[in-house]
Length: 210
Image (cartoon, rainbow, N blue to C red; front, side, top):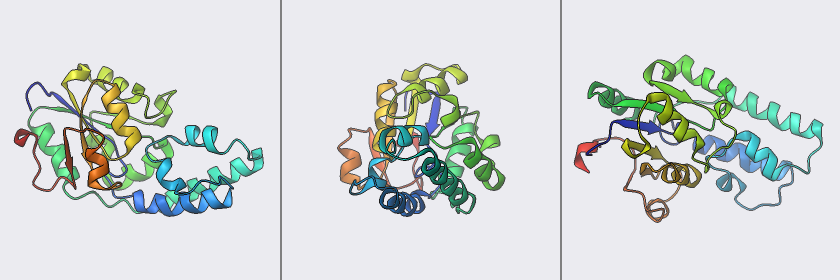
């Protein structure tokens, strides 16, 4: 791709195959904590925990909110972090070609610690933006703009890899090119978001082919 000097990656559903695990947790949490929303686990995709709590769980008592947060922390400690096929090698290839690479995730720092112990994303990426670093989560573009700023590149020279609707909207609102992965939503739904290209994973994918 011409003029692309930086690639920014979401983590869950893009770098690692965790979304089915989160579906199970948030489906149960939606019922247990009385959201009354069908397919709750799909609606919150790509958003930070503070935003989820503020938007969907204001009816809970302080004790219930603490219980929910504790349950999520315990759940994440026991997650598996299998990579999306080809993801790590793809990032390494881009770095070898001279592109800057960043991880932009709605996850907390405690979750990142767990991931880094196994996959060492803190050493793989040139910068990591987490939920802790922003005041407004996806679909707000703040996280992607911050990553570009840290790396010293213009948003127009960045390509974003995302799987959630909120993440796709964040990348596009930041003025970046977006490639969607249909690991979480059906291919037709990802293409309907008007991404540059929709891909199933990074196997046999390269930017020069677009």
